[in-house]
Length: 256
Image (cartoon, rainbow, N blue to C red; front, side):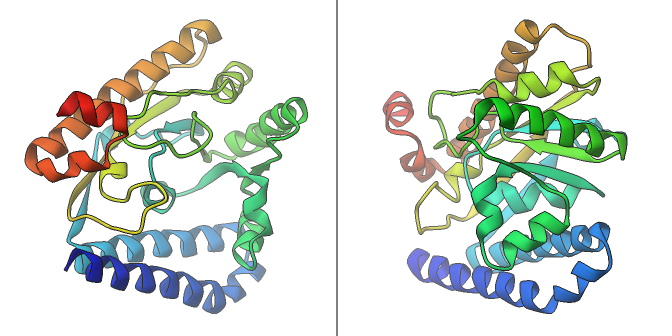
């Protein structure tokens, strides 16, 4: 049954995305915010499909910590799930993403038209300069900037590998940073087919104010995200012990 539900969801998820990409083509002629609204619909419809097909619900905690002005939102990245789930919570946003995503047919064009920030990770120095320049424009327009501080997806419970990009961005801009913890990797494991029932939790933590030294900011951010994510993972496994099999091997051994 789990396999069948996962199969049905994966088919429905990609069919839904393909239909939206095609039917939404006119949005490219009506400005960036129209594409953002389409992204909101994609996010909510994907969450609905996962709930109805897989029995996987979502709980957003700490929404009172979200800021109305331009800010940095630094999120744990365990799964593809948060890429569409997070955007449902902000009126306007910009993702920092790898340039290769803009090469995808249609999807990449939407990213470019919506002024998402695509970074060439092979050119580190130039990428950081571009990141700061583009982020400054987005923040001035009051947008939330989503960044995944580890740069790529990490399995639930894996040791953290935070990169300097988020600290560089924070140090260059006078903007608060909202840390985000989650446990999505237990339910939508990285590079795996299965989708597990239960409740995925995203928790928006209290904002780190602007102006801290970069050397103080990065450990503060990492500790906040990791401690909260570990708590959310433990909470989910306490409710559904079988989810422990989706932890990174070292963490799974610790839980056992």
